[in-house]
Length: 128
Length: 106
Image (cartoon, rainbow over all chains, first blue to last red; front, side, top):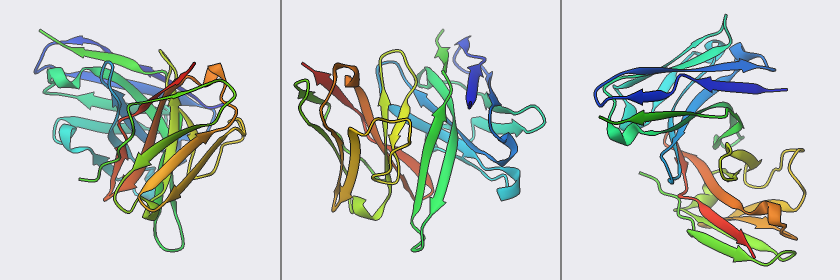
């Protein structure tokens, strides 16, 4: 059974830093592409970024609002995904979910990218 | 940047068919996924690649994508289907979510 356990959330002041973790089990983590998706209180879903598996190049991509402030990394020996957040803003307040990702490219090179499993989420509150 | 537009709310009577739309420019040229989120819970993927349904998801959920609109259809809607629903696609190396639709079963 796939399990993703998100942790590390809390209250932090604007300009501060925080590191989130996602402990994974029930699948071959080192082959998995993983993402962070966030949801501000009462709002919709927003993709934060993803990290490909090392066999697929380990590339990391970020959404524009977090680029340069957030860093995604992985430790395949610990089956753990991380999100290092710095220069935090009040608008970063959200529940952060880690996900397992599926990337599929069809014969005409159209990509499907979707999230098949989600963690339980961890709340990050940025406030003075 | 690419945008996906959903109606904020849809209402349906128990046992009837609910349709939730997701609109975007030439959306039929992209693959759409759908997620269900109940209050206080994490999202769950219910449709991927426009119309494919994971085995754990009931058959009453189906999806289609044509022209500029993708549609999530729930046949024989049950009270337990009351939730927020989000569409999602991939565009220009980034993930795009729709704003979400609250489905009320009354």
